Amino acid sequence: MGIKQFCTILALFIAPVFVSAQQYDPAKVNKKAAALYEKAINKAQDDDFKGGIELLKEAVKIDPRFLDGYLSIAGMYGEMKDYQNAIDYYLKAKAVDADYFKDYNLPYSINLAGKGLFAEALTAVTEFLTITNLNAKSRSAGEFRQKSYQFAVDYAKQKPLSEYKFQPQNMGDSINSIYSEYFPALTIDGNELVITRRVKHYNEDFFGSRRIGGQWSKALPLPGDINTDANEGAQTISQDGQWLIFTGCNFRDGFGSCDLYISYLTLDGWSAPTNLGPRINSGGWDSAPTLSPDKRDLYFASSRNDGYGGSDIYVSHYLPNGQWSMAENLGPEVNTAGDESCPFIHADNQTLYFTSNGHLGYGGDDLFVIKKGPNKTWGKATNLGFPINTIENEGSLIIAADGKTTYYASDRSDSKGGLDIYTFELRDDIRPARTLWVKGKVFDKKTSKGLPSAIELTDLASQEVVSKVQTDETGNYLVTLPIGKDYAFNVNRKGYLFYSENFPLSQKAPDSTYHIDIPLQPLEANASIVLKNIFFDSKEFSLKPESTSELDKLFVLLRDNATIKVQISGHTDNIGKAEDNLLLSQNRAQAVVKYLVGKGINQARLTAKGLGATQPIADNNTEEGRAQNRRTEMKVISF
Image 1 (cartoon, rainbow, N blue to C red):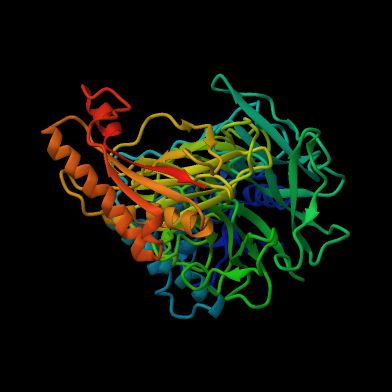
Image 2 (tube, rainbow, N blue to C red):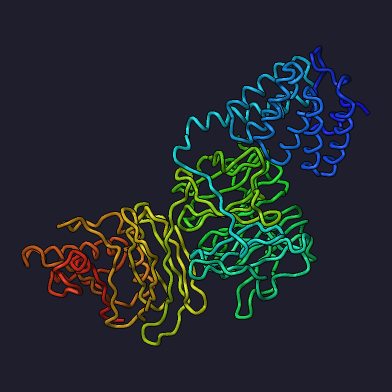
């Protein structure tokens, strides 16, 4: 068998398109070198690239003009993703005969791109495409790469990396093992990590680790009934750590090849999984779920027939009756004629990351980010750029609540075995909003019994409800708070006064999260609440637009409890004249009454009373105290 035939066998190493008149003649290669070449190719066919490279290095030492030897060394280094060595040996081959080498500019360009040298790669592939009699397959491959390299060059001009350094860190022996670990999932507090591990290289199970004192504990199989002899993987954990939704393939109760299942955390561990049913699962492949922080939206990838391409990203909504809605395609802003998969919705509930080979990128499955606008429509998908995206196929990633700490799976050179979990810091311009959270318990103020209740978080600027969650049966709750906006926080339960809180996060966010236990007051005479989301400009009594959501909550309370009468009282701090403060507080209380009457509440049920600075609830000697004293209250007069 001749040298040219060896080249044809491993086209990925050296794939000549045609043979032209040239200085290098394969027939004149030293016989000892040719024999070593044959052994090297056999090793490469068994995936022993290191062994093959060593034999080929001996061959080119015997015959320094053995151009095919250099090409095959370069190809094997390329298979090992050792791009620099691959580039070096392609250049050695080119130095022997530039004419002969012209056919190999395509694989040479791929290794240049692998190293991030996209401008050089573009030059090389453009030269490759000047060959006049390329076959259709080779021309198509070259044009695809040319388009990808041009994208990379343009991207670098638009978004220079500046000081950003992509430095993934292996998460170590506590998380990673000699087996493959992938699909990390994280709770909102960043202290519980769930991964898929391919145990004994064939059975996928879930393992969990907790961060204690800043260190991750050794990952252990999840307790309970979630792991089985079948393969469970590609999971998402709810931000509160109570739900685990995952992919199960070839289960007996499945609707297609792979379905989505849910498991709940109980006192005995994770419950036996339940199929999410035909509203979500199809007769095709359904996988890679991600759950919104309020547990109302489930995004996932599916190969069902009504999509735009091979696999698309869909969403299903959790309905008030406890059922999931029919899955909806996310549309052409996200999905293409190619494949989209591995969605991840951040804790800010507006930033979605996903993989795609249909959007323009670097050559394989790239990672993209897209953001949800104020009207819940998706913006434009943005490529995460090099070096996060490469010429290889990228997998899923997740991002912690801080908006920068990122986790993903990779088989980098320091892997413990197969795929490992790594962490790195995300570049500024592709980060989601840093997200805080408030958690606690809702309970009856008189009995201290936990109360299942509805919680709403409203963007004060847009008056849009950005999160709506239900506490668990004992009243425990968790709500995420993306920074950069001001929020109204309301807790509602029939038969009780609603609870009101305000989180002003548009200008400055605290370093810590919130823990607020909420005592709801039963609807009865003398029960009162401070309306913390009623706003006026300084020394003015016209209601600001940001007050609307709170006023409407008050209207609903009065509408649904038609017999109660209430007093709206206005309060000020002690700055200024007492009589001016008294008048201002009266006018502010009257403005609230006027709004409610305008909505249809009988004037006879409402009383406005201005109390000025006569009933402070905090120290007027500090700005913080004065801010608390400037308030609007509601008190039940009769029930």
